[in-house]
Amino acid sequence: MGCNVEKIREDFPILKRKIQGKPLIYFDNTATSQKPKQVIEAINNFYREKNANIHRGVHLLSQEASELYEEAHIKVAKFIKADKWREIIFVRNTTEAINLVAYSLGLWKLKEGDEIITTVMEHHSNIVPWYLISKIRKLKVKVVGVTSEGKLKKDELEQKINNRTRIVAVTHVSNFLGTINDVKEICEIAHEHGALALIDAAQSVPHMEINVKDMNCDFLVFSGHKMLGPTGIGVLYGRRDVLDEMNPFLGGGDMISSVHYEKEEFKINWNELPWKFEAGTPNIAGGVGLSAAIDYLEKIGMDNVRKHEKELTSYALERMEEELEKTVIYGPRNVEERGGIISFNIEGLSPHETALLLDEQGIAVRSGFHCAQPLHELKEVKAVSGSTRASFYLYNTKDEIDKFIEVLKQIEKLT
Image (cartoon, rainbow, N blue to C red; front, top):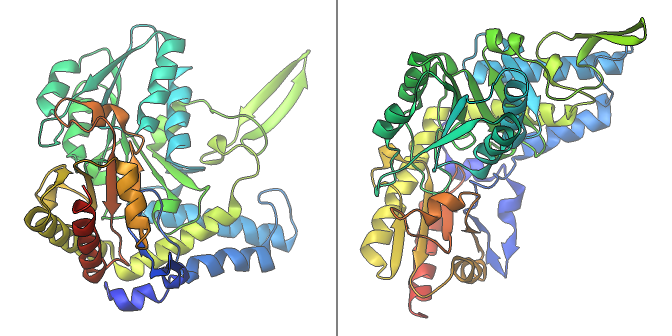
């Protein structure tokens, strides 16, 4: 299929909508992507024809629902090049996946004085869980900084890691700066010191080819809603040998193989992977929708998605730097080192004011700290009031960027 953008756009009903009387230009893809009709129809079809609970019934509908849900795990495993589909755990989102690892490891495996390394570049979801578990278990959290170019200080990582480090938790792509980190090298550094590596891939899995075996990470987490899928479905990939040694984060139905009451106490045996970590009735329709989203992306080809986004980002950066006089742009300038994310500020305006003025012209962007407040406030970055963020995906066009630049020029004249 390739990136035939005009043909792709026909699959997204919402792109036909008008905002403030203007054609919608959707540049908030980092927060969530739009959904093609193929995903919408797959979810509708499940509820219309195959809705039933999984793993609990011998009747046909239950068997069909179970098969669809398990096939979704298999499809995700192939998509990120995992060895085994049982290494794929469905959760609600990236945030829940990180919390699952933090509490399953933190409460059962980590000891007082153990250390966790994360970075100032992280989304709050890869900061707060480690902070919480560190207070419960008396752990030490170390933070790696960034350069003025928005790149991770890997030399600082090498200085701070030691034989007490148990987990290194790092984002693959910054949702503010767009920086692409060399996570394969980071995983190698972690393993050299006997630590586990968790990669937040919420901003990479939807946009580029991912191979967890080549990356050699222990955990990889991402969300379905950022990759054309529905909300409420996310993924935790974990190496099977590591998952086998972990205790569940949530308890309830389907995550046990048996519960007995003997001699005035319960005897509980965990279910096999991945169900050990999927307590209760899961988001079955979400799994179906995610499966359809992967089908759509694979038809286009992730290399084509990445190529298209690089072209858009390069075009937008070049025009913004040449034609805008009062706009500050954050993050690396080399598109090989950044995703399809451009965060910026216009002098004299708050990020929210800029976003509202863009919205008046039908252009949807994000404004604020993007759940990355420590990075904004860093002296090397200096965006203490937040930023306005435009982010691109496979259905965006250069014509939309032209309109975006034209509106930004008009906004600059107001300051």
